[in-house]
Image (cartoon, rainbow, N blue to C red; front, side, top):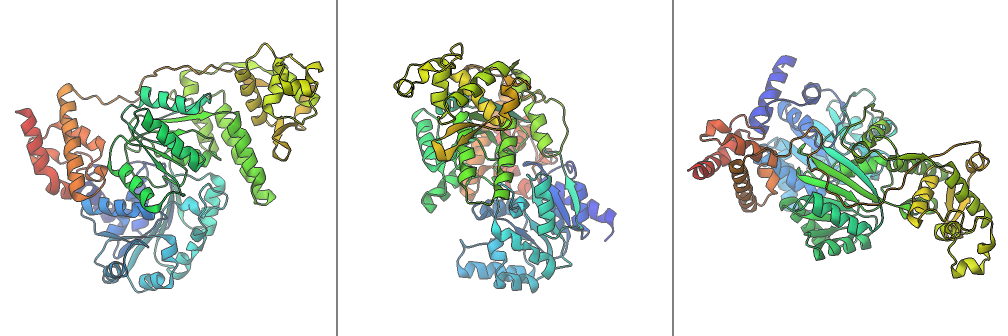
Length: 607
């Protein structure tokens, strides 16, 4: 079949099966390349439509498409979504009985299925490889391909073995996909998966609908509650915490304060964890408090906010996690509370890890880049995109653009801080050093006679919070380090010398007292849902119809239709089946399944 025919068939499938009028960005080019038998590496942000890049070629090519995915918990939803649009899909994983797995294997062998999802551990078994050797395979899609990188934030050792696909199936095209890969990770994906000859498709990493905001941590949980209630009351969101204990305490705190929250971490009973994930995916208005064990591949399109109560280890991790907000393109928030303790804790985790020195250095560099994003005086989005090798101008939709931070020449206060650390013999932690600076006559200071030092009280003109903000920036700049073997005592680095001697100036970010304010909900360049009062009623009615239908079918609500599609239907007010055609997200199967119900519902509301 020629290239032109392939393109026409691809567009026809996109419109009739998936219900989208046209391909976005590089989708069409990727689909054409893979359908024609080419290998590809695809970097596309969350919500950019990666799955269509392998689903449509699998339908165009003869045989069964194999999707390698680490997300056993989400395979069911992915299969449900495909079955809803009329695609024959299934999965093979450890949750199935022997009989069920054998049934799916038969369908693969006989070609009575379009797509099969399989976990990498399952794929590497002799039984699974033999199955695929004896079946007609149309393509291999390797999802979440960044898991192959040992430098990455989500390394999975079983991914390294996936080079076997190139060796055992040399004529089957492979497409590796991820939302997160800096140039180093990208190179490792190519090397490990033997994709040296693959075409690379790199989309913009920008998610313009997400508003980035990083605040000074004072009382993290209280700040989180204020943020949710003022900006995202009743919305669905995710809150990331570093420890399991903090996850549970945060969920409990939110529930006590009227926010419906669930917990998720690897230490929970498996059944409870799975039930909480299913509830989050299938119901509305839930806030999930979780460790990073939760989230990769979360397809829920209307997550309106992602919050971090602890500093992520790297920009890739932060980008991947915040990217779960606003997959539907609607205005969404990425909010983080960050303080001195976060910096100290992350540095300690690197120092105490059992990794070799090279790996520790890489982790240290990644943390430095993350601190740079937190402390930047310029646009956060510019800084974020620059990390992934992409140039951009100020976005107008992050906190530093909307309320530009004030910078000042901080050389003198930094000199005072460094001198104090030196005078207390570099043997004390942050709290004691700040007390000396501020002239606090504590028992400890008297015991050590630090009230007689020349530096005692030289920083009395600033509050404890201001000094903590300065100290955090000084650590981020690499002028001080924290010695975890010596009770977290502060130590001068070689870089501190020129500053102390007056040979180098230091620009700092002015401390801002946390203020409770209510910024506008609509992100710049986006209109908050512009429905009339009557359209809003239709939209609300459609959402409750969707909830009931999803329960009947035992699938997540967004698998029936996402909010953006319901919003379009509310505006179009279709009075006949034909009026529903062409609405984004309404393919032929969904039109046949739900069209009559929707038209009836709308005509009842128009009476």
